[in-house]
Image (cartoon, rainbow, N blue to C red):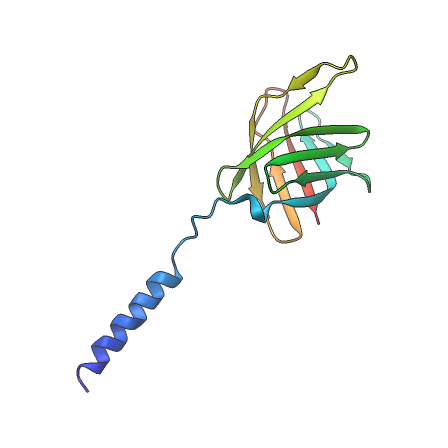
Length: 136
């Protein structure tokens, strides 16, 4: 009887240690798919909120491709998940003359993530910071 009790305690401790193990998964699968833009809030000297249209979205492809439809603008790019709390976004756009412009990569912070909601916060730029509210 005395030997069963310590074995039971050790088994319980091992179970607790493996159950509390942090998931090191940096896969983009949690982010992939089409997310509708609810609104974008620009934090500048004068805060501005722009509501998303029914046709506005971020589409995070499972292969790292990114498509953004924001009002009349369509942009493509790539993204990579740098952890479960941030996503690097590099956007390619074409100007009115057909010349391609690639933005420098920016690391957006992910917050309030659930299966249906996501908030992306831009890095603080000299002109301000913006927060994008997305939903599925």
